[in-house]
Length: 141
Image (cartoon, rainbow, N blue to C red; front, side, top):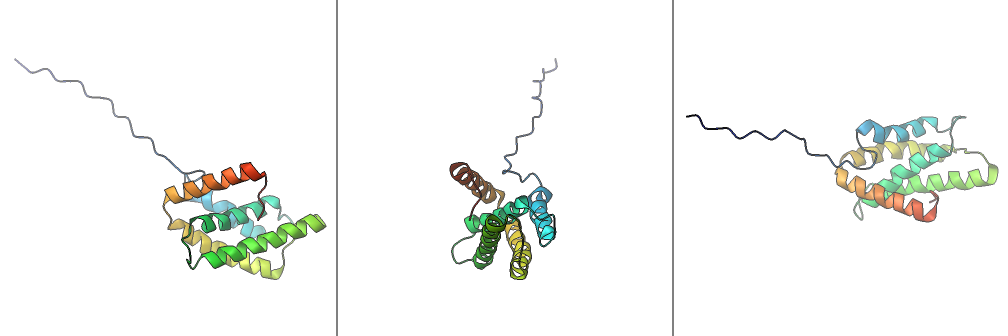
């Protein structure tokens, strides 16, 4: 007599919990790099400013106190603040040479840092940023 075999359960892959917008690195990195390329160009717009600001803001939210990346992110935020203030006065999103240098150099360094951070830290920082945006209603420095 043969033993009856118990039927096997169908395989179901466990769901992945992915952070906001980080299903792949290109989706996370491309907006910042596109904004970096648009700096100083005629098509530089408010969305590019937001993309640069969100990159620096994520680093400021994630990096531990006294980390070497924090001053770089802070200079990026200050450059974005100047761009936003000038845009309010003039109605155009222009960039000075110093702002261009700070943002282009800072973007590469902050992206390198964000690649080393666990996804869960990025997810927490993104959720905190979204909650703050929903509360304040604007992406301002």
